[in-house]
Image (cartoon, rainbow, N blue to C red; front, side, top):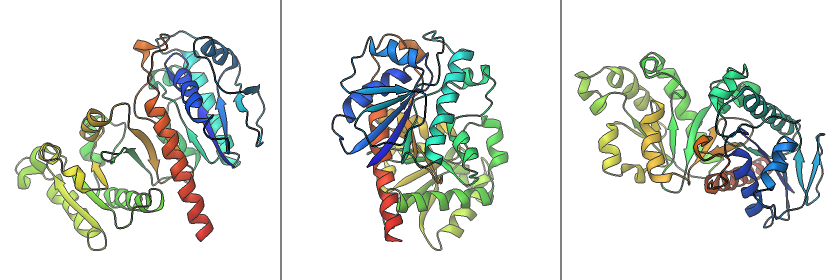
Length: 331
């Protein structure tokens, strides 16, 4: 039996809502799977007053390793809800749900976690200073070589730097860091997505990919040497000028597009995939996926949120977990 855990995310956003809507869609069709949902009991009860659950559930505060068909709601205590804004309470609840989820992963009670969106502002208000969920799971698993990726049917994207100010990106751009990212992405495409002979595209940092050093030297001095070194063994191309790359839809020719900073690839990715993309942390020993959108404070409490991305996050988690188990058996 495959087992999955969903977190509540920020309780003042749409996290609990899209988690329950997702369970409504996927749990009834998967009798061979077990689902856990980590959420404050009072928030769960409040949410199901507006979204009728079509699944049977039990609420408990203890970790349980069972194979019943019930949805196990793991209660993390009562937290005050203030829909539509980041608070200390929402930051603490989000963090506590993530800690509990990792405990389930760490004890191999579940095969994957699907995390609802959190607010970095709320986490910081609560004294949790991680830049994001990606970095949390990387630290908890003692993983230094990881890459934030975004998966979809249209194209897959990856980030060399994640939640960093633009002014810091050139300083962080190192040949060794690029080679590490190439290797993590390559192994993920093969081991987790089952793509044989994957092709990777790399974007430049500067306009026109540096224009031969006229606009910037990072491409000539760092990115191109890294690509040349990696291309001796694997299929990788670039650095491409991002505007021409996406205008000519060259992403269709590659299994992964690596950008140097956050918005460089996430603007086109979300333009093409909003409500359909999935955030996946490559390189971790555990499987963690998440929707590619935020907490949506602007519609929190209206119960009109679209759960499509959360559902796709579950499907990718199930696909990757199954592939990893198959790889393990074959080895």
